[in-house]
Image 1 (tube, rainbow, N blue to C red):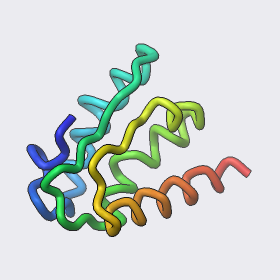
Image 2: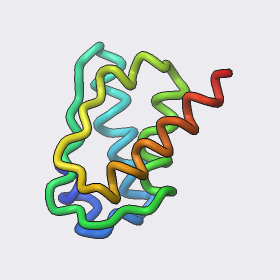
Image 3: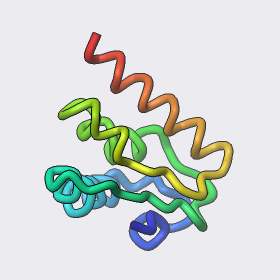
Amino acid sequence: MKVFELAGSFAGDKDAAASIRDEYLRPALSKGETVALDFTGVDLATQSFIHAMIAGVIRDDASNLDRIDFKNCNESVRSLVEIVVEYAQDEFE
């Protein structure tokens, strides 16, 4: 899934994040598939976008994280992904 195609270079639209989550991530993960989120072309993202896209699927099942591949993230986006992943995992404890 190329995030840029739904979110553009600034990934800040939570509705786009929800579409990625509900139309791509959840169906693929429920089938046991590994999914790739390709951030090529995404220069900036908001924490709320990343949270809306992945926190719920991690909360649904922590092992989902092992089947999500974050590709071509710049340092800023990678940092936000790490923050959201840590936050979502902390909710289990």
